[in-house]
Image (cartoon, rainbow, N blue to C red; front, top):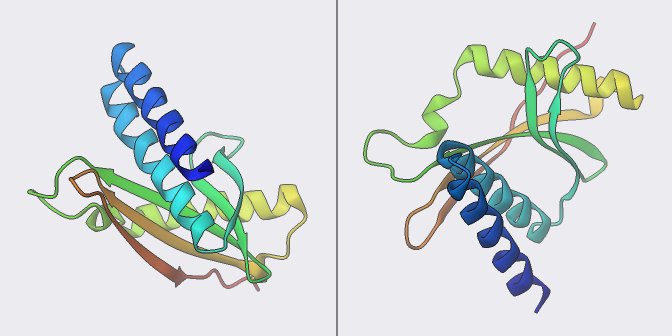
Amino acid sequence: MLGWILKRVDGVRRRARIRRGLAKDAVGAAGEDLAHRYLEDKGYRVILRNFRTATGSAEADLIAEEGGEVVIVEVKTREKEEFSPPERAISEMKRYAMARAGLEYARAANVDPERLRFEVVAVVLSDPVEIRHYADLFRVVVD
């Protein structure tokens, strides 16, 4: 019952963003909403959304806890997959930005960087919605 309500709320939020002229933001936010629900269904506990570094140069879409580790999640969303899958947008530069965001979060939250892991959730807003989860994609090595 709660899942149905949450999906309805997500749909209302998406339509409101589109009405305000934020269609691109609505697609990204819809993907984040779906990824959030997907990860919670898999046993993750999402603790923060849209964490930005102090300089604004990097962002973590979702930060979650799972299995005693802190998971930094990048969500890539596309309305269609006709040009390329969303996960192809994860370049080396994007991984570097994810690592910066994760390390800054770890410092701010007093988390041991050894407990960080980085993952990607790719969402295609087709009918039915496709969600691909790339767990434990990489980790940072701290000297």
